[in-house]
Image 1 (cartoon, rainbow, N blue to C red):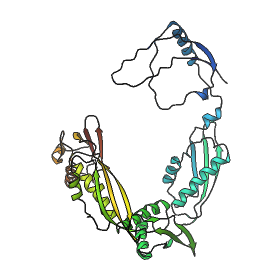
Image 2: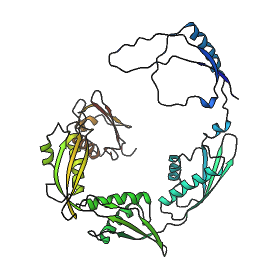
Image 3: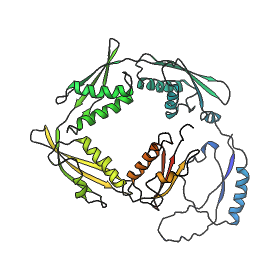
Length: 418
């Protein structure tokens, strides 16, 4: 049922943000009128906006009093189904044998299939969620899964969806084949990607793992100077109960390093940074060494001087040679140093911690942050024999103050035997 509410037509104030400016606002008479607005058309939550309140007048005071009285009345939605549509769905599964149900539920939550949405009352919800479940099973190596679902209304406030799953079988990978390769042998490429795949999956196809391993394989080829190598979408073929994976490859040209131009660095001169490069002009462009230099060694160098927000972006310019089988790669490297940070507070979190923890730390409050000394401090904690293994990244919480240039560090510790 649509209810009548009073809408106060307020003055719209155009605010222009100008430093050190003072705004003078004149109040005007406000007209009051009645309009019908259904509950489901109320403004949804969104990005907050800056509003300035107009000075109160006799007219606005009377209107506000009436408006507050109406707002106290409970509003009923026009469409009760819209409320039900936002209710969580209780999901249950039948037939799961080898599948990790916790991971499946997490996947469906990411797809918003754990909410009723607008489709819970018809077959579309079942079809869409069944398709999500199939996609999950396919990504885990199940080749021919089937899923059917049903919706049970157990009460007015609770919906339950049950999915009957036939996982199918996991087809083992028999062979990796490559199409279009000339420089790298199929055996060499196959060995590289097989080692990666079996490290994460026991001999069956997982699309997510395959994508990662294809990236690892591309880095292997780039480390030989083929910086523009491309691997196409795999084609899967089943034969005699085994899976053959056919992978298109375009190796591209062999590149050598040309000029390296560095911009954005003020802490260190471009000449000093270029001197640290493991590659020289004319050498085969090893993409792996280049990546390690820019993203690991230079990051560590800046981190030792308090620049913990160092980032780098590289733009290559590829130039083809006379026979197009070789070329030259010039590099433009843009560095964003960020600002220098000092250590604010170092805290330790855990039960029954000793009192001398600060003595194991090589950085202290008010020191310029040094990433190498921080890592050595974590080594001291691990070598003390008092705690479970401390991961320098996972077991530490860094909170920075951009305005003041401070970084607070909280280290989580767990005593052995607890």
